[in-house]
Image (cartoon, rainbow, N blue to C red; front, side, top):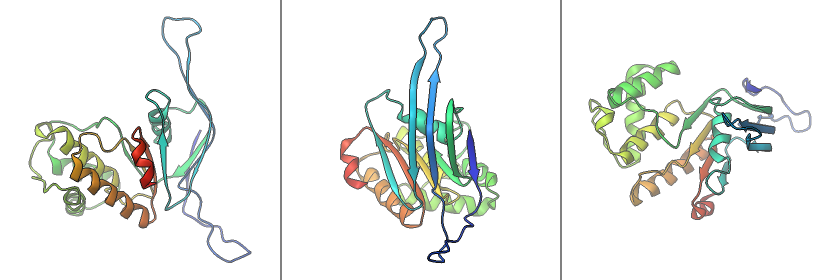
Length: 215
């Protein structure tokens, strides 16, 4: 079960400060995949996972390929059903999947306007905000360029801009450095630091052990 949190409301009687709920809280999460055509071949991808990510914090999930990292993020984003357990998260979140789901025939600005509209943003504001994020990743975009003509690394930059377009309270990032060069990789970490400083909770999937030094 996935529950979406409302705006922070509770106030502690001890210190009279607002009690802000976690950006996301997972309890007892289990997810099993059934393999078709084989008996007793169910694959347990997640087994009793507990996770709490405070607002403004940064957590990395590190592990071998196939251990369930991406599955956990997909469940947190609502793309996969919860087998058992609960997921409670803010309703304002952004998700950058490991493999982008961009439409190759749409332009850069059409993507920005489309994703901005989902959050009620003005068309012009969505485009200007997206361009600002992309420039911080080292790319001055041509808004009329079709996404299918972009390189893999440039598509990933657009993927990241779309995830952060509405300034969400929670960012779910699945190996977001795919296809990025060394300079863009450094720019990405500077952006993640800025997002965290602005109050967003960041949950990052990575297989690079060096990334732990940034967390």
